[in-house]
Length: 146
Image 1 (cartoon, rainbow, N blue to C red):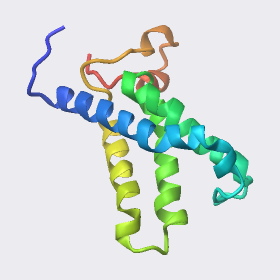
Image 2 (image 1 turned 120 degrees about the horizontal axis):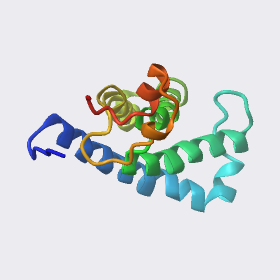
Image 3 (image 1 turned 90 degrees about the vertical axis):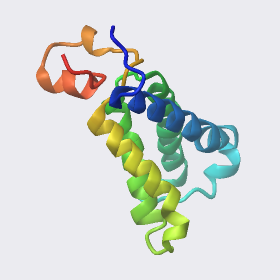
Image 4 (image 1 turned 60 degrees about the vertical axis):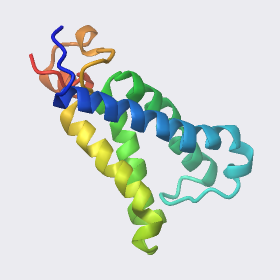
């Protein structure tokens, strides 16, 4: 494997790992630890109930963030994170000033860039064990050009 220190693939790797850790540590993990506290008062923007909405957000912010950190099925696990940030920006904070929704916008832009660019250099690639359908490979692939 030929790895160039100053390349877009290395930049994607650094971005992926740092944003994954940040989301997990400062957003997902606190929600998981305080599930009982949050479950009764968590917003229900898509009318699934407060607890189910919280579970979906925890799934995205914990499980998907761990997958982002390791680069596993990067495009597939970014979909729930992108949806979560879209809901946060346009529904939860839709009427709020930009200062209130700025962080969710930044996460949304970073996740979108990772979705388009892939995982970068260092990742666990599960595309090799999946059927060789071009769409399945693209969603679960790391983004590396062959």
